[in-house]
Amino acid sequence: EITYGDWGSDVCSSDLLVVCPWQPEEDATIAPRPDGTYDLTVPTEFVYAFGQWHTHTIVATNVGRVLRWDGQRWSVLREPVPNVSYQMYAALNYYDKLLLGHYPTGEIYEYAGEDLNLLKGWPPAIPGVSPHAREAQSLAVYGGDLYVGVWPWGEGWRYAADQSAWQFVQRMFTHPRS
Picture (cartoon, helix red, strand yellow):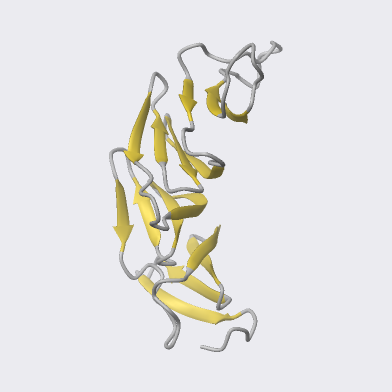
């Protein structure tokens, strides 16, 4: 388990990600792992999304930092870039990959053990929407198909796995106009 927060002056002096080993069958106190902390160095940085792929935990922050905890150590998959928007809003396991919903493209990144890879055109955009202000905010699986909700145009998309194709479901609301 990885937790986020200010643990107070006895543990840290700034915002940290803290690894706290825990097994559901154990009846034990959850305690921070001494070598499992990661200092979030950007003021007001916080976790937006996290997900798990096998033994790796991926953590994405509001400033665009993406980290991997491999069970032993933290590594950085992406450092924040000042004044460049890059955020992951959602994470979902889909078949053998961890998918991450992205802003500002509204597309999906995948993680399958090494790097983050942009899945260009996943999902596509409806005509007339900005390609630079879309947020893939929700991800779900139903019947083996992937569903993605994209803001601010309220786009609903379905990836039909058996056809390897995207299908536009509908707009969930009419504002803003596309």
